[in-house]
Length: 244
Image 1 (cartoon, rainbow, N blue to C red):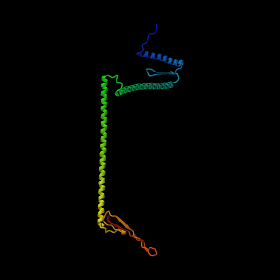
Image 2 (image 1 turned 60 degrees about the vertical axis):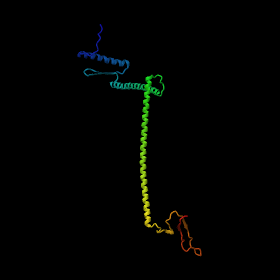
Image 3 (image 1 turned 90 degrees about the vertical axis):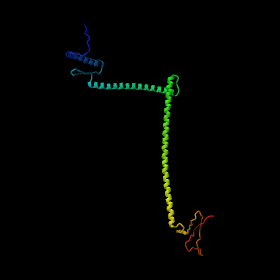
Image 4 (image 1 turned 30 degrees about the vertical axis):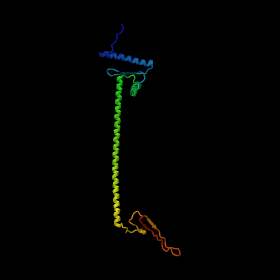
């Protein structure tokens, strides 16, 4: 008779469990050694018993096996991550292409094209959408016009304020000029405005305005031998006569 099939589950009896662990451990270590020799494979086997005891086997060095395992695991994770990321971006690209197709179709329908596949309800919805869009465009246009008007009104008030300030400055300058003229006339009155003031070089003035001016130059005196006895006397006489 052949051996009966053993149910794979935890052995409750401690002694039986320990015996089974010892037998199968030795068999596993033997199989690992045979696999490394027959197939030229790098094998590393680590076993911890229920009591915490360590059993190990390595075809070369356990450290090199663990380092190779860690490196291979990282590379595998990177490949899996890159594959997952590639699939993610492929799904994103497909979704974006579908959205672009829907937007292009909607745009053509808004432009009045490709309406043959739409029923009355779809056309009504499209009309309502166009009316709403047109209303929003008009509201935005009115808002921009109002903002421009307010900006121009603000600039107008600013220019008006500048004009008022310039007008005040002009009035101030005009007032200063009037005060200067007044001081000049007062000064003339105190020094004698009737022509009695001293005028050099034989000039004489009259109080009459807008009269032509005539200048006369007297010739210098000469002696019989043709020499001048004194510096020439420029007899300039300023005569103001009223014109006809």
